[in-house]
Image 1 (cartoon, rainbow, N blue to C red):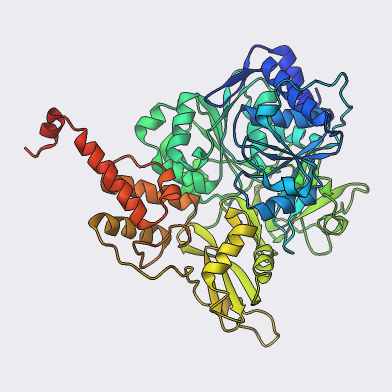
Image 2 (cartoon, helix red, strand yellow; image 1 turned 120 degrees about the horizontal axis):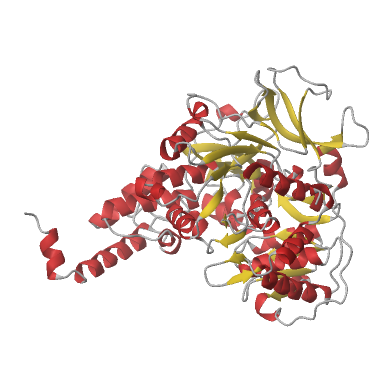
Length: 608
């Protein structure tokens, strides 16, 4: 079946007809065969059809990882609609913004979740009410050029952009994955990526198209490198998608014993951020040639990834820069052009554009943004290329090298963020006169957003209140880790902002400093300060208000495990986010473990 002439759900249906009794998807508590998957998907499709959803409509999806998620996505595609991913826990204001932008009338949700959109006239369909829905007698005709998903990315004006992705573009991406990695029937791929990150589509649709098995990592565990390793071992995962920052944590957690338990793992794909040579060196030091490492580059606007570099140990030998992003994948074209859209000679810097089958339709309902980003192909009439905003060059060996960005877009933990959107949100807070957002590294390889604000009343528009406002209006990855209030922003004689003159970012103000009062609090405070890059952490200080995020939670937890010699769940800092609460939990757990010791245990532990 030609990759460009098939819809995603049609390919899964065809596979289900070939292997109806093979396991298609499992989430730890349930598993479905291919036949059961399609039956459940038809029930979701029936529930949507009963609500009038049809071809080219959009359906919001606020489901966490489970077999229901896979059934729901296939059900949406079955009726010809496109899914709009919304991460559970997204602030209500952001949910409404995405749903309004997508013009979605229906939102699929876990039981008890996603009640916010109901006030806006959106029909909430929860998983428990789908079973038994009547299946339509006939299905609409869906063309490969129809929409399959709308992914909202950060927008510089404060309004996110909905990328209109098509079946044909994504089907081409899945077909390339199969040619490149040769997944065999029954082999397992781990679905760990949150649905709002487009690499999730590869984890879901690639294995199902070719007879593989999708293993759903339980919700929340995508932050935990130990949980990921254990899932890869338990389910004999053959392929793993990661961003470099998570690969860093996985390699730090991985032991020689773990490596010996991973005979099934064949390939790891790194995407979303620049891959550092040092990380490649550590990867090959751990795996040798037993596991392949891909470095990919692309954009949601061009069907997820458009280039690939098959990494070698030589890629880990460089001391500076990033690993090459490789060559275009099948069906993709990458151009390095000057401002006049003329070819740039090999070795010279230029703007990176993507062409080919993967180019999206544009930004949903936004003709002006579409026209600015999706421009006519310079020498093939009727075709378009996507202006990525990235700069790069062709190297002498025919590889692409990423250099930097032309605009103010940054990537933090693999997610694209327009700094202008962060600024626009904070400018809406009463009393904020001016804002500048930038990216900075508080600790090595830990990029965060810092904001500088000019306000009319420092007693009202405080950093704490501004951060709380940002938390209510931005996805978690875009909330500034630091907000500093200034009397004025530094300007050049031309009136432009003088970025170099901005001061060192300050951590958002905390409640009145309370010194650590116990040895455990002192140890926790010291560890958090080291991980967060904060000189003084008090007993009542809150991890996330100090600039913490999920990957720093992993680092802090690992250090606390080493310091206290007990098992500490990744969820601890999320649930006990101040030093005193975390320290109290640790003390109680240590006492429980001591109380559980037998006399023999005590004798073995006693000094000889």
